[in-house]
Image 1 (cartoon, rainbow, N blue to C red):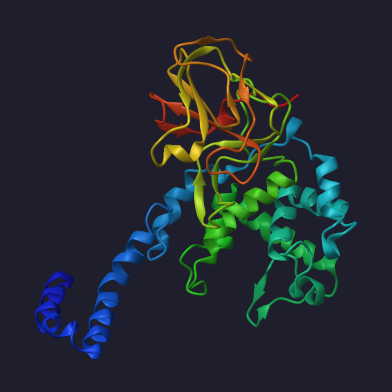
Image 2 (image 1 turned 90 degrees about the vertical axis):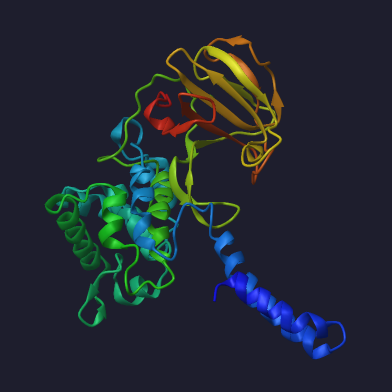
Length: 357
């Protein structure tokens, strides 16, 4: 008997008595909960981009993000960000040079190695690294491996990453995630591994970007806020409001209202308002500009819109002001590139933007 037939049968049996018998009310209420709850849960699981009941189906979503990791400026470690992060990371404090030394010996990216270690040890404070000198979550036949010194643990982690990256060819964060934290693993019933790729990606970003096996920028579009680093990349991430794993369809630039926002490329304004319907109303005040190559740039969460539909704009012309309208946790610019039509297929903006000077 399906849910509809069940409801109909219960209605015939209970409705004549429900208004005259308190017990009938309880029974009917329970039946309705049992019928509605699965439907509610099904609805609640939609629109997150991830299938928690069939986690193996999430691979395409993750792979589409290319790990969301981008190259550090000039392909070198951002020393300022590196030192700030590494010098406040528990047992890793003062060990930044050791990470670089071991990574160079193994032919791997020290930024990626550090990002994984920071994540696996909760910034150098976990019991595994404090008591067992295990910075990489390395497992043996008896569980977490124990090393005599932190240096020994880091060397073993470096060798393991060398084997996965150099020998096995798992060169991107997404690739590594498939073996380091496989989605749907039997020992991960709550699907925590789905957070591994976006968390490592965010950690890499906080360190200033990768130094190898990363995405470079073509420079077709100017940055809408000149010389500001992206603080939330395109691709899979932990949503700052919902806490869910989701696809970030643009990049976020740090800014404060009323700082100016500039057109990334010359073109015609085809949209300039606060959308009235979901899901576009989450953008808040948004401007969309059409360019000659049939790409569209979108500038969201603005505090002020300074252009009108139909207006032609020059590259780096001021078009609005930074803000936090729509679904936002604070002042920033959410920037997207669309293909073929406004609000069409979202492309990775980092493939088109000029690198910051």
